[in-house]
Image 1 (spheres, rainbow, N blue to C red):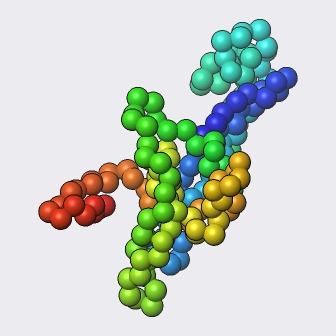
Image 2: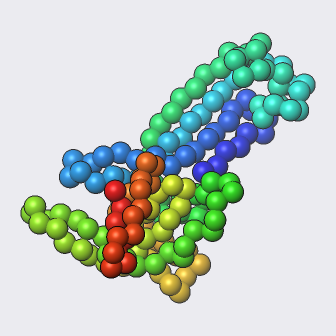
Length: 161
């Protein structure tokens, strides 16, 4: 999602989208925040994002790394970057999404967005067409698209596996 060095400090924050499986069996989007700190390094090399002469394995500073998961927020959607050298994703739009209620499949309309290797889906009430901020709430869930095959069977339906 984003990364950046904090001026004057020896700290780098990297955020990326990930997911967890909730007890109902749905994938919930999370943001993995990785914080890397360098202690005891000098500050005379401008090629390093930490502004020091520390190499990746720690160099003359002691590296500390911490990763925490936080809940995804509506504002995070605008910061998700897609992969380089891929075609422009399709426009966000309403779709039917299969969900199981009491063991039976239902297909409620959800607003979906393809970003960064995930298909995010939202409640229609959480999407605004007349506002600068399209999303007013975090996604209800995600469909991770790693190792996904899209088939076009006879009849034109699209099936995700």
